[in-house]
Length: 191
Image 1 (spheres, rainbow, N blue to C red):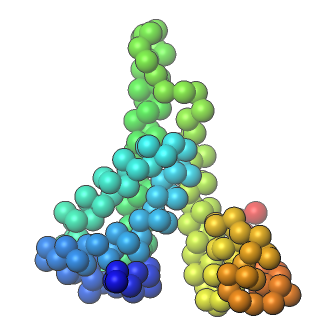
Image 2: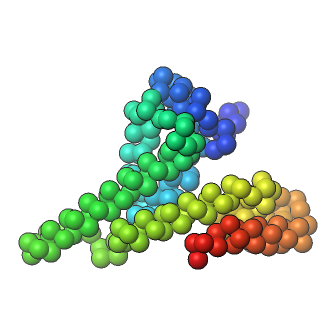
C-alpha cells in the first residue's frame, strides 16, 4: 500500500525546516504536494513541456539546496516555491529573448527557438494572473474548489464530476456557478 499523498496545505514551515536538515522524506512530500501546480505555472509561462520539466527540476534542486534560507515571515512555503518558479521562468524567457536578439543582430544562421516564444512582460502578466486565480481558488470552500478544479483543470464535464463525487448534477452545477461568482468578485480588479 502506498503512503497517502501530501496536500499543499500540509506543507508548512516545519516541513521546509526538515528539508533544510536533509530529510529526503520531507522533500518528497514537498515535491508531491507542489510539483503539479509548479509544472502548470512553468508550462503556462514557457509553453513547452520539455522546458517546463527542466525548469521544475531546477526549482526543486533549488528548494533542496536553499530550504534553510526559507523565511516563513515572507509567506507560505507554496508562495515561496511559486515565486521561485516564476523568477526562474522569467529568467529563462529573458535569456531566450536576449539570445534571439543577439542572433538577429549578428545575422547568425544558428539554430534558434521558434518565434512563438512569449514576450517576458506578457508571460509575467499571465503568470501573475494565474497566481491570482490560484490564490482566489484557495479562499473558496473545499467542496466548491474541488468541483471547479475538476471542471477547469481536469477537464471533466459536469456529469462526470457528479459521478466522480457521487453528487446530484444540480449540486455540481450550483457549486460551479457559486464558485465562478465568487472568483469573479475576488478577481474583478484583474479584468
